Image (tube, rainbow, N blue to C red; front, side, top):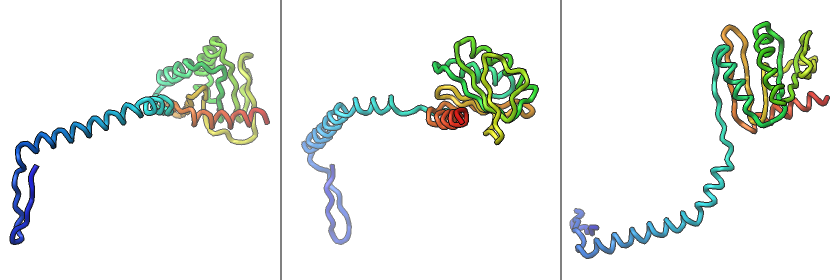
Length: 179
């Protein structure tokens, strides 16, 4: 849009002729058309890539109401096995799970647990194995969801939506379960 000349170490600028503005706009339009054609070529691949990418997220829940909400989210899974780890059974945790795990059983979801000690009364719909080594913590895994729970003082839970993380815990659980 401007030309530049150097005279006596001073730059001088001069506007181009008005008819050159039309050429400039035409060149930009051609570039945009080329970009549109390229985008049209790759749009299908971009959409396919976006839909196959794993969408991971995490949510934090506080208190007993938060735990109920987190477990209700777990109940939405289409998977048929809930796996859980429990390092020990506090009275608060035992009471909660006695009320909530039957909802999984009602939905036809098998419930399997691995812990340091098997509670005295285990419901018939639940299968539990005791191990002699520490377990990773209070963790529920179903489908692509992993719920980590802390029962200290005010219960807190982190729900991770990630197939990769859930598969890690499922593989670990299954290897211990089969041993």
